Amino acid sequence: MSNHVLNSFNAVVANLEGGQVLDDLTTAVAEVIAAISNEVHTRGGKPKGSITLRLDFKQDSGVMEVNADIKTTVPKAVRSRTVLWATPDNMLTTMNPKQQEFAFRDVNAQAQPRDAV
Image 1 (cartoon, rainbow, N blue to C red):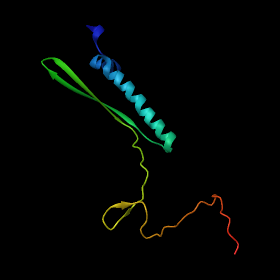
Image 2 (image 1 turned 90 degrees about the vertical axis):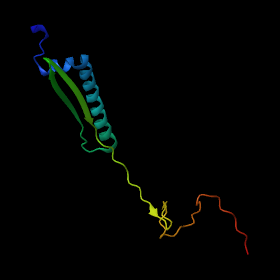
Image 3 (image 1 turned 135 degrees about the horizontal axis):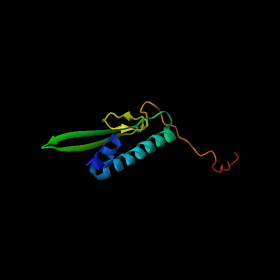
Image 4 (image 1 turned 120 degrees about the vertical axis):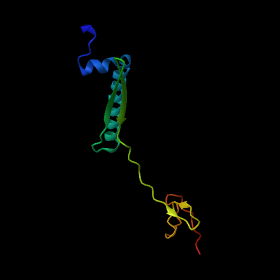
């Protein structure tokens, strides 16, 4: 019987769900690191992530049942800001209604010769 005793936390986790919990934790580590690295690459800063392993134990008639739950937290992507204005009929517009519009022309366009008067 002593060959089957799980005498360390590592041994318990390695045996949960036939090893699936350990595989899922390994995948979770890679996903959290990738999300943090991506956030640093795209936006900089010092993003954080975490992995939480919860083990629930229940004994019934001498049998110990262990249920695992894994939760990951990755950096929340920062969304960019959009500026819009409300119209009198409660819609949104990209143009500031208090600012006049300018008529622009292409300054690189071929100039038309003018007739002399």
